Length: 317
Ligand code: NAD
Ligand code: UDP
Ligand code: UDP
Image (cartoon, rainbow, N blue to C red):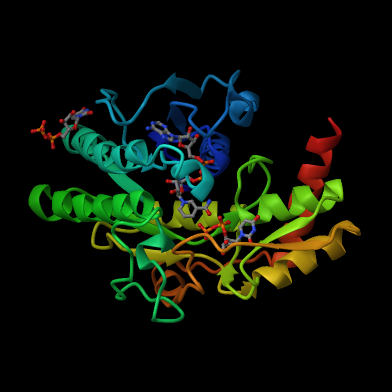
């Protein structure tokens, strides 16, 4: 999409954390963007700065219903991503992933658009293979509280590959690993925003379990770059491809980093581990390096400093 030609692009979930950064980048590169969102977890504030731009159009729309627009590219990001949010209405979460995928694939089929699915490292569940490679089939509890998200996303991947094989759709499946940065909601419930907001307010830092579980955190700008590169790969490359930062940290290490970088006096409190919480997670990004020429450029400490600056300003407002 960086090649200079103007594309008509649909971004579902465009008023969310990742979606808003994506819309911003697409508009900046001269594309015509339709942002479709039902504001379940996203907000008009996230895209307020784009509203006056003639290249940007905002549509209140729920992807579980059909959508008829004419576009060249579809980025399907609509879906709550934080466990707190996706478990609030689990039936709606699965509907969003599955019916949303069917509708967006039907749209892509009708207009001949290329379509990218924001899939997730959660398709690997609580993994026995570490780091995770794309050929690992995962270990997901199909009836647990995370299943509405994990199985919904897995089924969406199935639909993408079946439309690809059955209808020759040009698809891209991206397995996104934990991503953080400005425009996460302060009450989002995910670990980075929780720890930063707690540290800035001097409140206790909530560690679930003993804090020895690990995650690998990717800064949002790196993730959006990966998304762009994947979208512009040739039709012979549907993915799936892992995109994430392989730097792996325990939640205790993350808490200590948040405290140090905010010079906070917050103490740690230990709370029960949520059910089915994956013990470890780290992407193997060999495929992304080879096929997208992509690797993360922002280390955790640098990304945390930028994210802390964002939340500091937000909390002061
Ligand atoms: P987010 O919650 O900030 O954004 C999701 C957006 O989708 C919100 O604006 C929400 O209002 C919208 N939405 C939800 N249901 C909808 C529906 N039925 N119709 C239309 N819009 C709907 O989350 P995010 O972090 O920006 O995640 C974006 C996508 O990336 C999601 O699909 C998520 O599963 C995926 N992902 C994100 C991460 C991450 O760490 N941020 C990791 C893996 C995958
Ligand atoms: N769809 C849509 N926009 C379009 C075309 C289709 O939202 O421009 C939806 C429609 O609701 C349909 C679904 O996508 O049910 C799947 O479309 P497909 O053509 O694959 O199947 P069918 O129409 O036969 O159910
Ligand atoms: N977590 C935590 N304290 C919090 C929020 C989350 O210790 O206040 C832990 C959570 O149990 C998980 C990790 O941090 O092990 C990442 O959680 P998040 O919800 O951000 O993402 P996900 O579990 O979906 O990777």
